[in-house]
Length: 105
Image 1: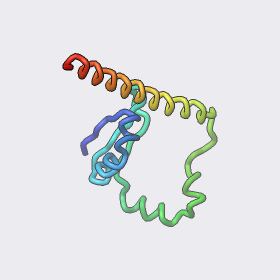
Image 2 (image 1 turned 90 degrees about the vertical axis):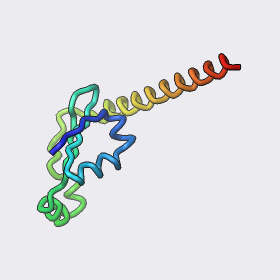
Image 3 (image 1 turned 135 degrees about the vertical axis):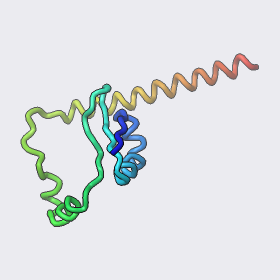
Image 4 (image 1 turned 90 degrees about the horizontal axis):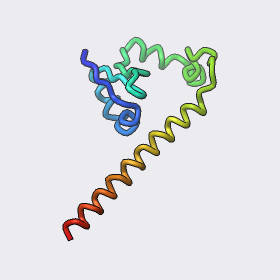
């Protein structure tokens, strides 16, 4: 089984592609700041059958345990950093395009 490592921002941007790859048997490891934090793997049929038998309200909370630390604010800030990084890169590219056009004129 092959494995691919991708950053969180890329995983969010191309999630459907990585889910498709996992369905085909490829493991996709998601990293945050170059550290592995999650893995997408194919769901075997036995697990899928068992998941269908669990009522939705239980399935959402199954195996979550008691959180030791509330990370909701930290996760929100990390998401905002990803957006801010994208906007910074987009502005940089736009500036480079403007400068490139200005030099040609």
